Length: 316
Image 1 (cartoon, rainbow, N blue to C red):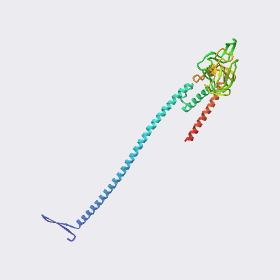
Image 2: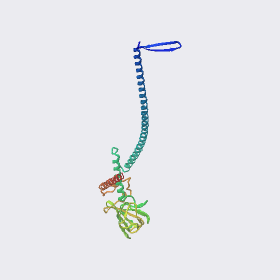
Image 3: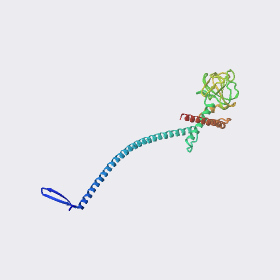
Image 4: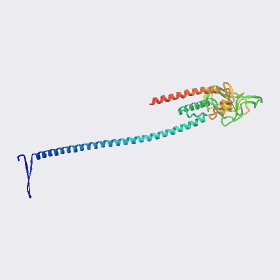
């Protein structure tokens, strides 16, 4: 029994003896190893789980930080989207306002609105058309030279109030008092200043663009001198009754390359009835004139656009 191990346990109830043989000892050792290995394994698992939990916590914090950053980005992008939508809405309103005004301008200019044409093209056409009209109305006599005056004698054949003979009246008379201001009906140059007591009396003639001229007779005094440049609306003299005259009035003439024209259509000529002059006044190559002015205006507008583009590029 050398290979046996005996364990004695004593108590008040007596002593008990437990014998373990060789097989039992191997079983006990094996169980001890297994328990030890189990403890090590359990400890390893616990350590792994603890590290994994810490790693998970770290990842969770990173995800929370990233989530917070993304939330801020989303909020920023949402604000940007709202601002862009508002800006787009404002630009659409402005674009609609520009379109509406362009429609009104095209109606005023008597242009056919082409909805298929681009807005830029329509604006260019309207700008050219408007510039042509402004140029012509500024450089060719338009409107009356005196304000709120009654026409006392028109253009054409009449009985001369002094000689009593039938003559061709080459201008239009305005019944105005002596000293009534006279204004230039267009840009021009003072070509003639001629004081006198006979015929036309104190006489003044302005030379305008494109072969047009205007003259003023029976003045009381002049407000300009020969060679002066005047703009439309400038004061040039005062009415009177000098020369061969039956009373205070202004004799007003318009000529084209020396040939007299009826002033009446020019007195009523403005933006609203711009095309009327082409049919009422013959003997002027209006189509050719408009073409020349249109070419000049187009070149000026292109030059202006180029200057704006160059200025913009310089500041960038």
